[in-house]
Image (cartoon, one colour):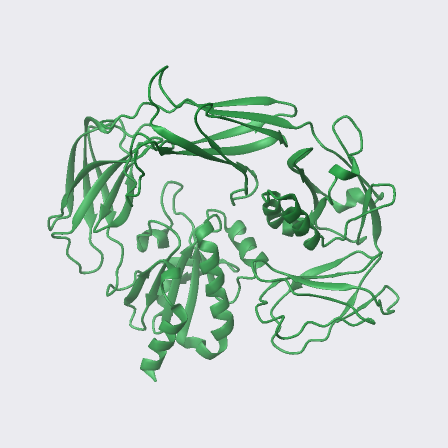
Length: 552
């Protein structure tokens, strides 16, 4: 790669970087006008941004795909507009240099990565991360202010991020249109910090023994326009004797505060998470104002093991998948006790009709953290139901998930890019790996990236013998599409299965009886399911190769 200025003259000192988390980010420096990235450095590179920068020039940032052969590039750099960045505190005073680390200035496309650097508690680690992702080459001027360059035709908005434990933590300003900075100055005023005091009422009265050993909490930001959860910014423990913690110097804004206690006697190691008195969970939304000293008191409600008992009746009807029978399959029905976990309601063996009759139940109520009844059959969660106040008798259908040997369900999905309808049965005759996922699902990210890397490696040699399919279940198609594009997850077939109704699962989600994501299926050429489970639990590549070898 070579870099040239507006007149086409070579730039001797420049830097190139490929950035596409979670992959490594190879970089190289220009020597006598030439920068080189070798095949070994590009081995794990898939898709992301190419960033080319040089002192006195605006960085060139553009999408960059996989490198499969020798590529030679000439990249033009422009001096653009120099922007002076002046940061002041809430009374208009400059931040002392010792308390003013290199601020983050980033584009919209890099915003999510910037959030997670906020969560790095160690100042040295965070400073190193900010330096490595300083794509706009923000630098300190002799007078203590900062400066960077942007192209005169910049259209993507910018953000400013700041976090210092002794000044203000987790502050972000933006989006700021690049057109607002053409005058060459960006004045940022930090807001007055807020303080949060969090406490837990660990006992019901003086002298009463607490059921809690401690309470572990975390604080995360709420980003209204994003479906992804914000990063966890602060963690801590509430414990005897004060059961209190003060979190100072927070940027004003919206936060989630989550706490979970551990019991003073024993530990809950049961996989079904049955409720017990010492394991309390709660989540609160906070909106902190500038200068506010907010108080949050968590008061665990009494533990009531009979909370599910009432006067209502429910009939659960479990429908089999394919030609399976239900007789002698074990079932379990539980009630989610708000703030505590699962209370056992009923268990037994299904009859051939798949009917479970439940008596003397309480209505679910409106608590978003509990009140629902859950149904498991043969250790497989089928879902939950909400019992209304009326009528006295209510009925709830469920379906056993498709298993190995069953004929794969058919359903219509939409091509993520074109919105054209496609049926899953259209891929009959191929080996199909089908993965359900969502952008808001943290555990979905790694298997989704691995599936895309698999498509990149075998797209050509597998050809029409194999279909690698990801079905996104986000409510918003554009959020899903943008996530796929920005993360370079384009080496397989991407589909979207929207909800048919706001209170119902998507049609494909329901057809395959998905109770959680990620969930994946391996389907043979004859359309029958060969495997079902978490995508990380199967060696997908070797299994597909094994199936293809059987056909040769």
